[in-house]
Length: 317
Image (cartoon, rainbow, N blue to C red; front, side, top):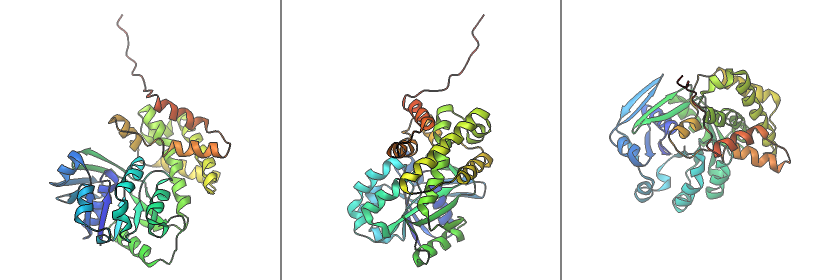
């Protein structure tokens, strides 16, 4: 099969390398120094994968000029959530001239509605990358860790007997990407947002990894409360998350390998944070429901004020 990966960051490059190793054709969309480096050699290091080789990496303009949308069997969108609207607007005509499905592997719960508005629900696959940490450590070099599972389904509801979706699931699993189909992908997306809102903003604020956060009695309790606020916000999308769901997600992130969250890495590198799509999604929906989200709102506000942890140093004398 032929895949187009939009957003060749840590997540996109890891899954792309897996698909290449399985014999599929993959085109990566990147930009800047990372694109230049990938056109020479892409290196992906993972505990179960060591990939290094020249890959088909192009700028988006080149893809639009040189290919048709239907040249690809699947378009995997791995962009930062804040870039979705701009990309869809840029490529709207190219996308609408084809029938290829789009699979979003992005943070947040607002990407699928934007994709569906552009290409229709019949071509929109909601998805999430589960238990994976991946980052660009240098141009053309990616480091990833974790089981790197994928959950996917048609947004907002899955046709479980859909041959195309079943085929994609088979291909992913055969490529070493543990994948399952969910009949309630919106529910799955909100469960992941429970984790993302729980640890990403607080990690970016404190500079701490996920294990350190959840193990700390005070910060761990804050993580849990931000997860609870996310569960409340989900009701605005007619998604019911129970206390058991929150406990499960807290246990999952507490026992997973200590990782730097994507928001912490973005803050360290001076890149825009996905606050609107993670904390903002929770705050907006709580307001819509007439509920408050004080823990999420406080951490989000401190990040917008660029409050940073102080490094204490003893004074002379």
